Length: 153
Image 1 (spheres, rainbow, N blue to C red):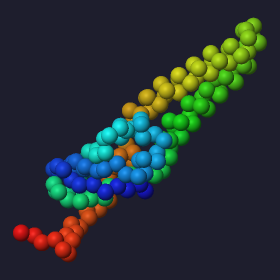
Image 2: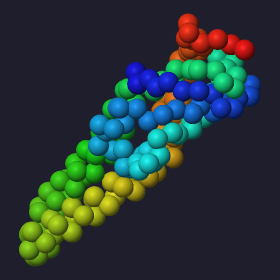
Image 3: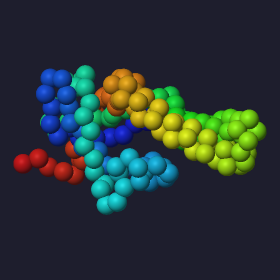
Image 4: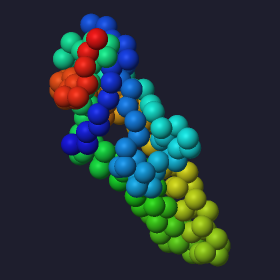
Protein backbone atom coordinates (compact mmCIF):
# COMPACT_ATOMS: atom_id res chain seq x y z
CA UNK A 1 0.00 0.00 0.00
CA UNK A 2 1.18 3.50 -0.84
CA UNK A 3 0.64 5.93 2.05
CA UNK A 4 1.02 9.66 2.49
CA UNK A 5 0.55 12.07 5.40
CA UNK A 6 -1.95 14.88 5.10
CA UNK A 7 -3.97 17.50 6.93
CA UNK A 8 -7.72 17.83 6.64
CA UNK A 9 -8.55 21.28 5.23
CA UNK A 10 -12.31 20.78 5.01
CA UNK A 11 -14.67 17.96 5.93
CA UNK A 12 -18.31 17.06 6.05
CA UNK A 13 -20.08 13.82 6.95
CA UNK A 14 -19.26 12.12 3.63
CA UNK A 15 -16.16 13.80 2.12
CA UNK A 16 -12.86 15.09 3.46
CA UNK A 17 -10.44 17.36 1.60
CA UNK A 18 -6.87 16.46 2.45
CA UNK A 19 -3.86 18.69 1.80
CA UNK A 20 -0.69 16.71 1.30
CA UNK A 21 2.82 17.56 0.22
CA UNK A 22 4.44 15.79 -2.69
CA UNK A 23 6.83 13.24 -1.21
CA UNK A 24 10.15 11.73 -2.22
CA UNK A 25 8.25 8.88 -3.90
CA UNK A 26 6.83 11.45 -6.33
CA UNK A 27 10.28 12.89 -7.03
CA UNK A 28 11.64 9.54 -8.19
CA UNK A 29 8.57 8.64 -10.28
CA UNK A 30 9.01 8.76 -14.04
CA UNK A 31 5.36 9.80 -14.49
CA UNK A 32 5.41 12.82 -12.18
CA UNK A 33 5.14 15.20 -15.15
CA UNK A 34 1.88 13.61 -16.28
CA UNK A 35 -0.09 13.39 -13.05
CA UNK A 36 -0.35 17.07 -12.22
CA UNK A 37 2.35 17.25 -9.55
CA UNK A 38 5.07 18.68 -11.79
CA UNK A 39 6.67 22.08 -11.51
CA UNK A 40 6.71 24.17 -8.38
CA UNK A 41 3.43 22.75 -7.08
CA UNK A 42 4.48 21.02 -3.86
CA UNK A 43 1.08 20.78 -2.19
CA UNK A 44 -1.98 19.08 -3.55
CA UNK A 45 -5.51 18.62 -2.26
CA UNK A 46 -7.39 15.38 -2.75
CA UNK A 47 -10.87 14.31 -1.76
CA UNK A 48 -11.58 11.05 0.04
CA UNK A 49 -14.58 9.45 1.69
CA UNK A 50 -14.79 10.54 5.30
CA UNK A 51 -14.85 7.04 6.80
CA UNK A 52 -13.07 8.08 10.02
CA UNK A 53 -15.21 11.15 10.83
CA UNK A 54 -12.22 13.46 10.54
CA UNK A 55 -12.56 17.20 11.07
CA UNK A 56 -10.72 20.26 9.83
CA UNK A 57 -7.16 20.33 11.19
CA UNK A 58 -6.86 16.57 11.81
CA UNK A 59 -3.63 14.91 10.73
CA UNK A 60 -4.34 11.76 8.75
CA UNK A 61 -2.66 9.00 6.82
CA UNK A 62 -4.16 8.34 3.40
CA UNK A 63 -3.54 5.22 1.37
CA UNK A 64 -3.76 3.86 -2.13
CA UNK A 65 -3.70 0.15 -2.93
CA UNK A 66 -0.67 -1.04 -4.92
CA UNK A 67 -2.31 -3.75 -7.04
CA UNK A 68 -4.61 -1.38 -8.97
CA UNK A 69 -1.66 0.96 -9.55
CA UNK A 70 0.38 -1.89 -11.04
CA UNK A 71 -2.52 -2.72 -13.37
CA UNK A 72 -2.77 0.94 -14.43
CA UNK A 73 0.96 1.08 -15.07
CA UNK A 74 0.73 -1.98 -17.31
CA UNK A 75 -2.38 -0.65 -19.02
CA UNK A 76 -0.87 2.77 -19.76
CA UNK A 77 2.66 1.78 -20.74
CA UNK A 78 2.72 -1.84 -21.93
CA UNK A 79 -0.73 -2.29 -23.51
CA UNK A 80 -0.12 0.29 -26.31
CA UNK A 81 3.20 -1.34 -27.19
CA UNK A 82 1.59 -4.78 -27.33
CA UNK A 83 -1.13 -3.49 -29.66
CA UNK A 84 1.51 -1.75 -31.80
CA UNK A 85 3.39 -5.05 -32.23
CA UNK A 86 0.19 -7.00 -32.93
CA UNK A 87 -0.82 -4.42 -35.53
CA UNK A 88 2.58 -4.59 -37.19
CA UNK A 89 2.46 -8.39 -37.32
CA UNK A 90 -1.04 -8.36 -38.79
CA UNK A 91 0.04 -5.78 -41.37
CA UNK A 92 3.06 -7.84 -42.29
CA UNK A 93 0.94 -10.95 -42.83
CA UNK A 94 -1.71 -9.05 -44.86
CA UNK A 95 0.77 -7.26 -47.15
CA UNK A 96 1.26 -10.14 -49.63
CA UNK A 97 -2.49 -10.53 -50.17
CA UNK A 98 -2.79 -6.75 -50.70
CA UNK A 99 0.25 -6.82 -53.00
CA UNK A 100 1.88 -3.99 -51.07
CA UNK A 101 5.21 -3.42 -49.37
CA UNK A 102 5.19 -5.38 -46.05
CA UNK A 103 7.09 -2.63 -44.21
CA UNK A 104 4.60 0.04 -45.23
CA UNK A 105 1.53 -2.06 -44.38
CA UNK A 106 3.13 -3.08 -41.05
CA UNK A 107 3.80 0.54 -40.19
CA UNK A 108 0.27 1.71 -41.05
CA UNK A 109 -1.39 -1.24 -39.31
CA UNK A 110 0.87 -0.85 -36.26
CA UNK A 111 0.02 2.85 -35.93
CA UNK A 112 -3.70 2.11 -36.31
CA UNK A 113 -3.57 -0.47 -33.52
CA UNK A 114 -1.46 1.91 -31.42
CA UNK A 115 -4.15 4.58 -31.87
CA UNK A 116 -6.81 2.01 -31.05
CA UNK A 117 -5.03 1.29 -27.76
CA UNK A 118 -5.45 4.94 -26.70
CA UNK A 119 -9.12 4.82 -27.60
CA UNK A 120 -9.50 1.69 -25.45
CA UNK A 121 -7.56 3.33 -22.60
CA UNK A 122 -9.79 6.40 -22.80
CA UNK A 123 -12.96 4.29 -22.64
CA UNK A 124 -11.60 2.11 -19.83
CA UNK A 125 -10.53 5.21 -17.87
CA UNK A 126 -14.15 6.29 -17.53
CA UNK A 127 -15.14 3.02 -15.88
CA UNK A 128 -12.00 2.64 -13.73
CA UNK A 129 -12.28 6.16 -12.29
CA UNK A 130 -15.60 5.18 -10.68
CA UNK A 131 -14.21 2.09 -8.91
CA UNK A 132 -13.27 2.41 -5.25
CA UNK A 133 -10.09 0.34 -5.67
CA UNK A 134 -8.54 3.16 -7.71
CA UNK A 135 -9.33 5.92 -5.24
CA UNK A 136 -7.32 7.02 -2.19
CA UNK A 137 -8.82 6.33 1.24
CA UNK A 138 -8.30 7.30 4.87
CA UNK A 139 -6.11 4.83 6.74
CA UNK A 140 -6.09 6.42 10.18
CA UNK A 141 -6.09 9.63 12.18
CA UNK A 142 -2.72 10.59 13.53
CA UNK A 143 -2.41 12.03 17.02
CA UNK A 144 -1.58 15.70 17.41
CA UNK A 145 1.88 15.72 18.96
CA UNK A 146 2.97 18.86 20.76
CA UNK A 147 6.74 19.07 21.35
CA UNK A 148 7.79 19.05 25.02
CA UNK A 149 9.48 22.46 24.80
CA UNK A 150 6.38 24.08 23.32
CA UNK A 151 3.96 25.82 25.65
CA UNK A 152 0.32 26.38 24.85
CA UNK A 153 -0.91 29.86 25.83
